[in-house]
Image (cartoon, rainbow, N blue to C red):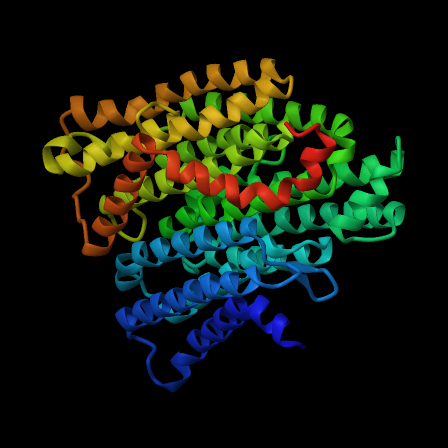
Length: 491
């Protein structure tokens, strides 16, 4: 292992050591120190974030950006998502404080599992080899299965974890079979080698089957139709902070590898797979939004909403142009911000172990907590893509990318479904402002207030002044797009 390898892996090494330390702390008599566990976890995340910045600066002067037999890359795309993952996990840690204090479960294992899931995400987004991507994906998934069932004595939680695990194992098998077919045809699992092999092919049936199976496995991870059936039950049964993790950090990680694989390795066969993904995108937007209309349980409503948002994000993958990849990065960030803020407000309406889950729990919230009711409105408008929130900027880039690449019909569906989504988002607004209610008590700890305030400020700031973010995502996507844009005529 050379010094350059250590520089590349410095954040992952620090995070792995920190996660392992959190796991072993209860063995030396610190089991009940919940606040101590939270602060130690935040310190580990802070050091890891600093190491990401340090390693990225060190890599700037190197002649290569890939190491470990070209299986691992540290480029601007990976750095953008690593910092986003670290931010999202830090917010989930803060959101989990009250939940862990009131529950019967140890905080040390909980935070350790979150850190190991984050480690898997960071390995995954730097992967430029299908096996390294798969290993990172499985580390994230296995940690997520356990976290979804963290309420070991609650039937809903254990049922959610079991469904998630079984369907996740099936999707992993499908993904691996697709990888094996791609290897059989291309002779390599490195994305650059796959790209070169595909550039010499006109068509290949076995390769197309492999791409379809790989795409099916990835569609499960982002909860796209028809691989979405696990999402409502898992979101409802998992502890609410873990639902926040699954709908933000985990989903952002899946979007990142979807973009890297299809932009870096599979763009030569775009005409073969784009129509299939376009159908998946359309179905996800339609099914997700229409199913959400009928939900009274807020966690299930947001689960179907996340299915619809997976369809929106796929617009950027299908487009395979510069605006498309910028849209994926932009939309992932603003989606994470809005969802973290929503889950923070939901956690303020706490009941025993599960938070305020019903739309009725928000009745009269404006009279009890006017500022947090306003914050909830901003987050919902951002998910709906209404200016001047950051969600409008994200959707603009995705819809424009679809139009530029010839998928205008898909952009029309996306616009119509965005209008439909406002119907069930506004149900919550009506409950907060127009209904009398004395249902759920507002209990906003300092940590929850901080998370909601940070997300609110970022959502409004990026909506009003989006230029710094646009410049950053343009830079972060540049190296990933070199080959794809050359093949696409530089669009």
